Image (cartoon, rainbow, N blue to C red; front, top):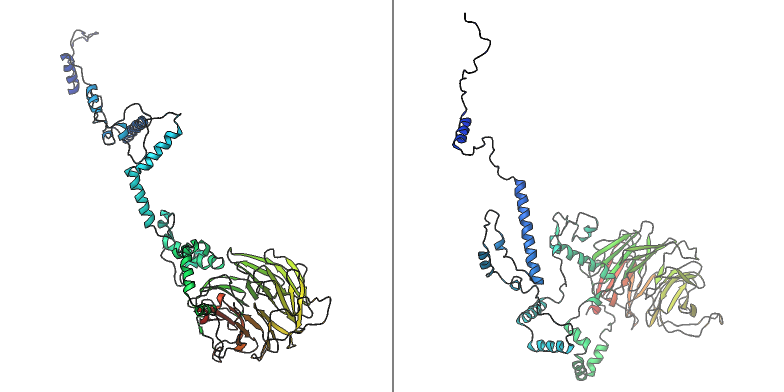
Amino acid sequence: IMPRSSKKDKSKKRRPKELSPLTAQFEEEKEEGQQPSNPNQKEKKEPSKREEKASKRARAEEEDGAEERRLTSILFGGGSAGFGDDQDEATDEDEDDYSEDEVEQNMEFLPSPANTMPDDLFEIDRTGGDDDEDEDDIEEDDDQESEEGGSEDDLEKEDEEKKDSSSKPAGAAAWVDEDDKDVSMNLMGTNRLRKLRKSKHEKGATALEGAEFEARLRKRFEYTTSATARTDWAAIPEEEDRKKAHGDDDFEDEENLLGSSTSSLLATSHKHTLPPQILNVVRSQDANRTDPNKSVVQAVNFHPASDPDRPLMLTAGMDKTLRFFLVDGEKNQKIHGIHFPKLPIYSASFLGSSGNVVVSGRRPFFYIYDATAGKLDMIPKISGRKEKSLEKHVVSPDGRTIAFLANDGFISLVNAHSKHWIADLKMNGSVRAVTFTPDGEYILGSGSDGDVYRWDLRSRKCVERFSNEDGTITSSMAASSRHLAVGSESGVVNLYSDRMVNSSWNASSSMQQNKKTPIKSIMNLPTSADFVRYNHDGQILAMSSRREKDSMKLLHVPTSTVFSNWPTSKTPLNYVWSMDFSPESRFLAIGNDKGKCLLYKLLHYHD
């Protein structure tokens, strides 16, 4: 056994370790004197999306800055313009370094600053000018430009403007919103839009386009606001009307007048004279056919300032509803209606040519409805009066005054604008009938004593009083420009001249009644004459009674004879409760107990 040595032989060489391929390659490169490659060094990654976006944003900012500097150099001078848009689209990868000589060669082909901007935007004046230039020189330059007639571009622009103005129609809108084409409205979306439906069966499943929606709104406006308030002043006149307004046809009119015969002039003066005996009348569709009343038609009234061919009419009754119709004899379309839950309507009337309507019944209060604005005002009572019923009222022709038939022989006057009490007019007995004269200067009343009173509205004094020849209780009254009709409960209608018997009569100086003889006493109604009404020219007097069926007559006032051909026993009048003539008497509306408003055309006034 060999003894183990305490110390190892340091001089003994160890066995060399085996190297890995990479380490061996590194050692070989090191011995050859080359720079060793780092095996742990990672390859460069491609740029990320965030880095690409940042680089694009930087390039866009550089391009915007270059464009701004180019525009600044063009507007204010100095510097040079850059390349066009097509030349600025080079990317960073395609950019090359140019030498100064190449840059100078390329700059020779760059466009000048004046040519980089289009001519039709604006023109830069680089000539400048002295502030002390004389005004005479400016005027001379203007004169030369006017003599030359302008440049070709200006002339072309003027020709285009003329063509555009000539091609535009006369009634075209001055401006049209292009976004209206994209509008779509569903008529069933809200309750207000349901009124724009053409029929009740139109459910509005398909949305309306902007043009159709606008057309229906315009049509709705014509049927409502324009029917109650006149808008014909805004219409563009025709060429003939313009010539007449400027007096171009005055000479021609004078020649026509000189050349016309006297017979033709006399014929035109009697053009609207109504022939007696035979009345040319034709029945049309009922005025309220689209929405009949559910009870007796207590009130029928035409708007005095509406279109004679298509007048606006209202109906009202015990069903507590006020309805408006546009009467044309065929469709008679309903415009709208308003319901009064606490007021059965006995009387309803338009206030003159305005769009306001006064509504009253057997209640101490009454309403004034503004049909144009859709506003309703309730007047709780007439100040100073204790009436529990205001069921009867009459409106003055100008619509300024409302006369209510009060108790104890009083007629209460109310201002339609302020809605306040004006005055009380007193007569003997109870008041049964009141009417205004067509000029609105006088008011006439009569009642249980059978006497007729006339008051001057300016002085509010009684200027005439006479006894009705029949002697019974007066039930109705109507006045025209020439005659006064007084109906009584006996069925007799007396026709008087509207001239006062004694204009200097004074109630305080004499208690004796004046006597007035009627021109004609009409006895064609077997029961009380509950309603009398003149047409617009006073040639027709309509009379009716509520107590007997089909009890109505029309009187030819100039000859004081009743028309024999109409109404007949077969005319479906039923019990007549109200009636009215349209403006220019082209239509006659009759309300009966069945809730219908019969409509008849008077062809004489249509022709």
